[in-house]
Amino acid sequence: MFLDVILLDQYRSTLNYRVSAWDKIDTETNLWVLTAMLFEWLEHLKSPVLGKDSITYLVIHCDNLEAALRKLPTHVCFILEYIIRFIARLRPQEKMGCQDVMRRFLVAMTHQSIVIRNVAYPSGKKFPKLRGGTAESTLKFFQKFYDFILEREAGSQESPEPVTNHRLYQVIQSNIVFQVEIQ
Image (cartoon, rainbow, N blue to C red; front, side, top):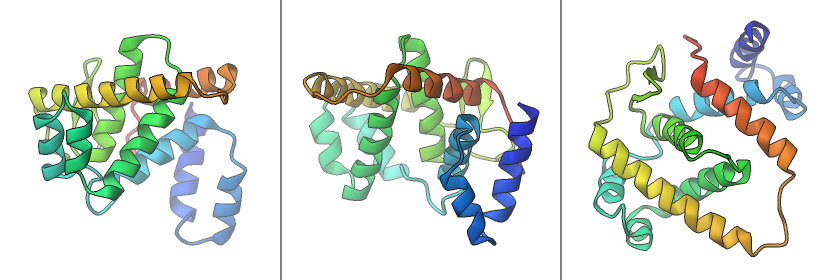
């Protein structure tokens, strides 16, 4: 894990300055590094994917997937769908583990901190705390979207390789459980 943190730091320091770093990341196979970079990227956007208005719409319409999506800007809907499809393709075995992954993405997309398994995320960032009711309502929306996507993909011929998905799911879980303070 220590070497993964070093590799992550190397990428962070070179991606903005060397074109060769993008070529290297294109061939990167270390799933821990790739998921950590995804979280870092989402958390360093100038404005969060889910701003205050978007969170409000998700909380108000957490029981009505269609109504919530109609209220959100189109680009936010596409990003949410992409992330939820990503999580769905991981095929997490346990509901709690799936919700932990959703919570971690919620942190990254809102730029607000959440406690997951008694640990505050993200570490080392001064994000305001997302209130418990707001977090749970938004998680409820994520779960409904997740269930919808699973139902739609159940009829699809194309299914991802379970071993790869299970491995990626384990890596994301380790990124949730293992706190890395990267400044």
